Length: 288
Image (cartoon, rainbow, N blue to C red; front, side, top):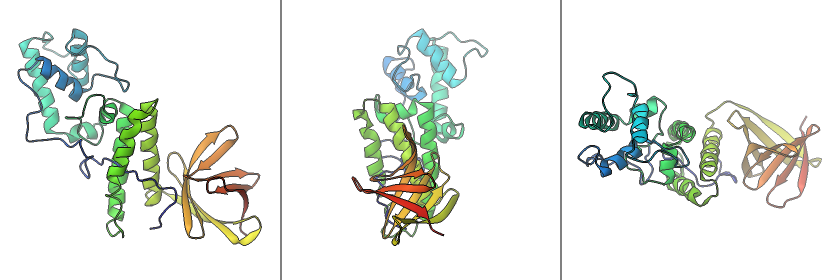
């Protein structure tokens, strides 16, 4: 496996395969305080059921609107017999349903309603809580878990072993999104980038190539490109002993593949490639 110029130290909190540090569920303690419908219980239910959107907006915890949302999230709103919200019977019923969900943490993942990691004890207002409360981010987390699991099988004999070692780096990078102006966009982009890196880096998706190019008319300055059917599309460009993973972006001038320090644009049947920060643009044509 080659070492890529474009690979930052990112990796997934991969659910049952590799829980994120600080997000694994503690199965030895009761996660639901007693009695049901107490203020402390309400706060835990709010975190587990996730009544808020990805931006933290939602009904006041403990209000009738909040209880209605809890019913909706648990799939019991409007069911018979109708139980008055906030009554002892209602509180016990919700308590039992949430305990059943906790007892089978993979159920939410299978149903496509949560991330690959447990949301039981995530810290409120954390990046993990943002992922837990956002359907798109949860889906990306599950997709990343699948890619990581597949990559792990291919990396079993990897020397030096780096896949698992990169996990803490990815978690830290993702969680640093709390500093971003738009935290959700930052988290989404981090997931999408890492999914592409794993899928292309470990050849988990169909590819086309390699296609060989000569640059600036010199046979000694050759470029080899392999295209991957990731989402968004990506390519691995190799030049000499170095290589770069580039992901398809859109800008004012059209289609651009962008790597960590490298970029590539198709223009009139040739590639315009900048290999390195501030490097001059090379013109590359497909080798005959």
